[in-house]
Amino acid sequence: MSHRDNDAIAIIHFYATAPYACSYLDDRQARSQVAVPAEAIDSTVYSQLVGLGFRRSGHFTYRPYCDACRACVPVRIPVARFVPDRSQRRALRRHGELSTRILPLGFVDEHFQLYRRYQQARHDGGGMSEDDPGQYAEFILKSRVESWLVEFREQGVLRMVSLIDRLDDGLSAVYTFFDPDQPRTAYGVYNVLWQVDLARRLQLSYLYLGYWIAESPKMAYKTRYRPLERLDDGRWRAFEP
Image 1 (tube, rainbow, N blue to C red):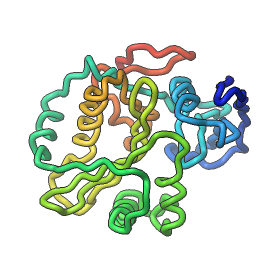
Image 2: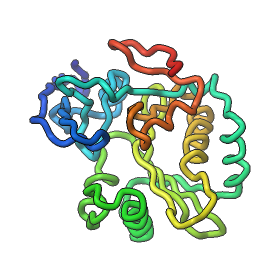
Image 3: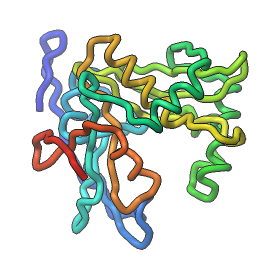
Image 4: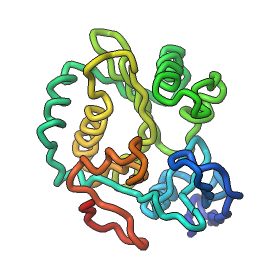
């Protein structure tokens, strides 16, 4: 892949990592294919890579590259055709009074404290529950593409934060964390619906949701958003699980 910028051609190379413990499926080994150099991956190049199934974590751009497993399936919502179902409409009504503010990437201690509470409540022992401010910044605040933080507040109280990338053809939902102590909430559902609406307002075609993994409850929820498309042998196709 090549990209012309100021009359220079930046060549993107790929390498495969050594096997490591899979974050989603127990007792499995995973590998990733990584795109380098990071400084050559701007918004245009990254948009092309996302269309090929890549994601990013900070400056690290990758896709699953496992030897004997194809469980991770890239999925996206074609926003013009999306229609929320009954439970999703309930989430819209339940949290419709949340106020939002789109911010540039930057450290806010209130965000970090919510992130720590979320990790400790939802992913305790998962490796991120003890992140310090530096680790949080590496994951959430490092980006070479057009990225935003979105605050969601309820009567001034911070309830949720989303990290979103803008692509040439859509938005990429990178990461969301929310108040884990509020009962009877559907923050995650509301957040996806809000991002669908934002993509429509920006006249973009897709919301990229990352990977669907049928065997992982944390990732299987993505099939609730219809219609959905999956990347299959290099082509995006309608997905009816």
